[in-house]
Figure 1 (cartoon, helix red, strand yellow):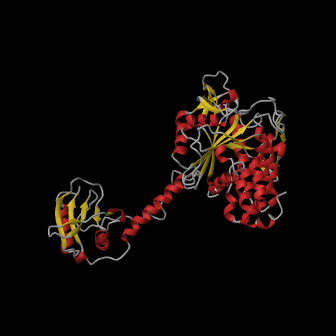
Figure 2 (cartoon, helix red, strand yellow):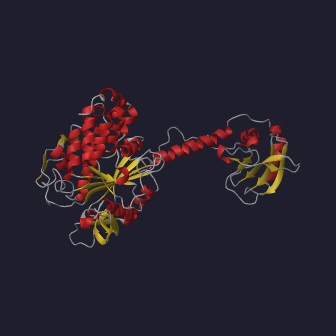
Figure 3 (cartoon, helix red, strand yellow):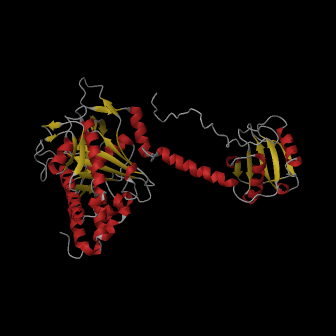
Amino acid sequence: EPPPGRRGRRRPAKKKSRGKRILLWTGGTMAFVVLAVGAAGYLYLQHLNDNIDALPDDGASTGGFQKDQAINILLIGTDKRTGSGNDGYGDKGSAGHADTTLLLHVSKDRSNATALSIPRDLIVDVPDCPTTQEDGSTKVIPGSTGVRFNTSLGQSGRTPSCTMRTVTELTGVTPDNFMVADFNAVKTLSSAVGGVEVCLAKDINDPDSHLNLPAGKHTVEGEEALAFVRTRHSVGFGGDLSRIELQQQFLSSLMRKLKSNDTLTSPTKMVKLAEAGTDALTVDAKLKSIGKLKDLGLELGKLDTKNLTFATVPVKDNPAEKTPVTVVLKDGPAQQVFDMVKNDVSFTEVKKQEKEKKDKEEAAVAARLEGKKSEPSEVRVRVLNGGASSGSAGRELTYLQNEAGVTKSENAGNAPADIAKTTLEYAPDQADQARALAEILGLTGAAMKPGESVTNSQGLPAMTLTLGKDFKGAGVKLDATSAKAPEDLQKSTADKVECAK
C-alpha cells in the first residue's frame, strides 16, 4: 500500500487531459502515478525508481527524447525465459530474443502516432555493436549479415542497444530511447487493469500457447492474456505475422482499458499498474527515473489515441527458401513506410491535416479581400501584359480609366515573363487600393500578392497588375468561383465505394 497521507492527493488524476497519457506498456501509467502521488509520496516514488532496471544505450540512441521534437521509442518484448515466472515457456535458460518489437513514433505536433511492428523473422543485417560489459568496459560484438531480426537481442551478448542499431540501419530512424518488457509485463499489466477484452472470430485451442477459448468476446488476464498474445498456430496463416495482428489488437484494447475512467479513478489499479510496470520494465539509462518517465508520459498525454496507427513493416516470403520460414522487405512499400516515419507523416490523419492546412491557407488568402476599400479614383496601378493576347494591357487600361474610374493607371508594356494567372502585387499600405481593384476586376484572394510597390511614371508608388494567360478581355471579371454544379447532377467521388443498384 502507498504511504499514509497520499489519499488526499489523488483527485488531480481525474482531470480529463490525463486520460491519454499512455505509452504502449507502462510509461504513461507511471506518469499518472507521479502526478497523483505528489510530494507526500516521495518515498513511494523512490521505491518505484528502485524497481526500474536500466541498461546503457551505448551511443545507439539520439541521446533521449526532446519535448519539442518528434519522439521515437523502441519497444521490445523479449521471450527471455530467465527471471521470475518465465521459465515455464520452453527454451529454459534462454537469454531471449527481440520477439515482439515496435517502433513507436509520436509526431512533433503530438497530433498522431504510429506503432510500427517489425517482424521477428525479418531477414536483416545486424551491424557491429559496441556494447558495455558488466565491468564497465566496451566490447564490439561483431555484426551478422542476412539473419533474423530477433537475433539483434540476447544472442552473442547483444543488448537492446544493438537492436536499436539494427532498427536504425533497417529504417533510417534512430530511436530516442528503448523499453524492454518480458512475459511478466503482459501477465501483470493485464491483471492490474482487471483484464483486457479480446475478440475471437473462431474457436481456438492452441496446445503450444495453452490458449483455449471459444469464438466471441472474452476478458483475459494473467496467464490467459499471455497465452493470447503468444498464440500463432491457430490464427491467420499460423505464423508470426498473424500473431503480430493479434498482439496489436491486444495492445489497442489494453490502451483503451488504461485510459478508461474505470482505471483512472481507481487508486488501487493505478498503484498496481505502477508496480507492475516498473517491475517488468528495463529501459535505457537515460530513462531510468520516474521523473523522466513522467516527462515522457506528459508528452504522450498530448496525443489523442484515436490517431494512433498500428502498422507492420511490409514484407514478403523469403524467395531464397523453398519452404519459407522467414520474410524479407517489400522494398518499395517498406521504404515508403520508413520514409513516412522519418518525415513525420501520419498514417491516418494525413488527409485531414492537409485539409486543415489548406483550409487555413485558403482562409488567409480569402481574408485579403476583406476590409476597407479605396475609391477607384485613389487607386494607382501599372498594367503589364504577362501572357494575355497582344494589346490586352492597352485595352484593359482603357476600360479602367474610362469605365471603372481608375484614372491613376498606366500601361507598363510587357512583363519580364509570361504567367498563367493574373496577379496584383501591392505593398501593405496599398491594401485598401488592392481590395478596390480586386472588386472591379473580379480577382480572387489568390490573385492578390502582398509584396512591394513600384514607382510609376510620375514618381509615385503604384501597384502592379500583370495580365496572365487567364485574362478573358477588358472589363471581363476573372472570378469563376461562384459557379456551382446543378443540384440534381449525378456524381460520385473516387474515394467512396458505391454499390450498383
